[in-house]
Image 1 (spheres, helix red, strand yellow):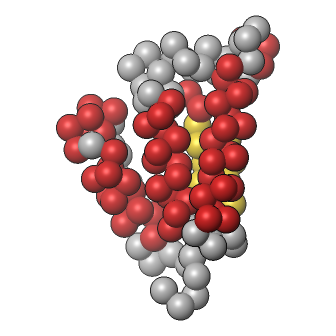
Image 2 (cartoon, rainbow, N blue to C red):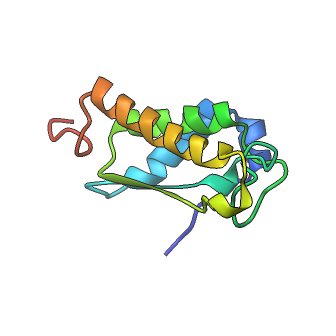
Image 3 (spheres, rainbow, N blue to C red):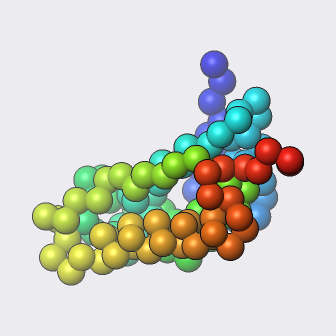
Length: 122
């Protein structure tokens, strides 16, 4: 089985739209459904201190949210947010971003009529 890895440097070079295009192409190739796992520690540590593995130089929150909305626009079957560790974050901003990620994803699924995944007619 092959893996596709895009580093944050790749994302910076390619831009969010091209990164999203590549990710969607890989995710949907031969798939009837896509499961989205959002690892909160992919966001820069300055914005999400309450995670098990803070990553300096990660996504800005607006970049992460943009990617999530772009994925949801195509449809997903389910989603999870992982690595939120409230004991490490006295301000709860990490959990707030996790909830925002879920809400933006759900809102996008509703907006584009994608609840339950990609439409059969497509």
